[in-house]
Image (cartoon, rainbow, N blue to C red; front, side, top):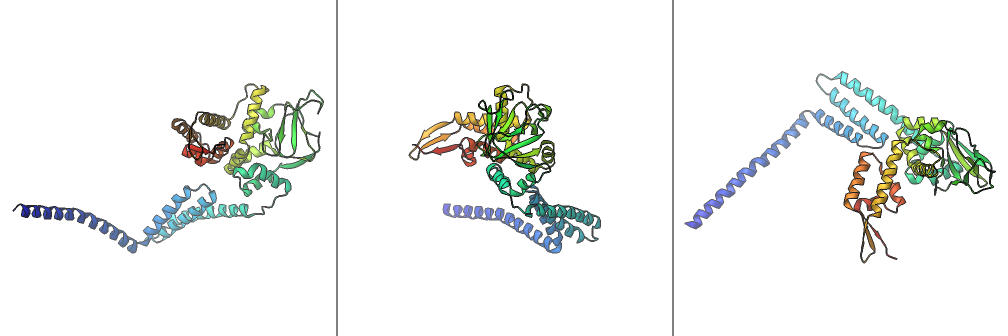
Length: 364
């Protein structure tokens, strides 16, 4: 009797489970069938949803060319949906054609810009490979820089004056090849060691007048030192400060490319000015201050990192609270991935190692 009762209870429980799971499965199947029937009866809804997904995907793209291409596809789907309505929504169709036309126009010019002749002369190639390529600047972006009105490449012999003292500096200069020296204008050129030097190999500051890009107040000041070529066949490229700043403000890609290539040199120049106390009360642009603070935070985190020996070598482990603080600061101040990568490389870390919070060094 007990066995029969248990069997009856088990059967009723199984029947109950089946009755619960059954409606769930049937509900999912019914919903799927309803979607299929809706798609068959009105394919326009499927096209409309595809267009929405494509447009949304476009806004996730960092490359403006990809963004516009996906926006065109999304608009075409929207046009197809509106023209398939009964009656057709001609007003929405016309607006869709306007959006498509505008995006196609800009796509055409972007295509021409990126597929134009990318050949560089020897000085341009040297400048690109030494100072821009490693910072992630694309050839077509670099071509924009060297084609700017006022951009000139000039060669100097040893002892020739590159920048005269006592006059406002209205150009941004970058040493491409060779070396130039900053000299005290009160002494004869070459009679004393230089105050500091700018080299074209990218290993130290190579930018002259770069502070003017982030602090317009220094443009009206007289340049304090005399800059002369320290080697024969020294090559320097110059940009008009106002024109370069104007292009940077209107074209965010150019702004990003220039600042990515120059921000280390700008920081070095700022530190040099502060150390020598040549410009007191210098107002620094927020972006430069942000990078300086980020640099300080990274340096402090690496200094405070713990070490742990293993068979493979020595693990350097960051403190989680410092790593989190730096990550939040980078997000709040919109520090880009390229800027993080370039700064971390200065201390021998990669992005992956930093994100993992640990780095393995082989013991000597």
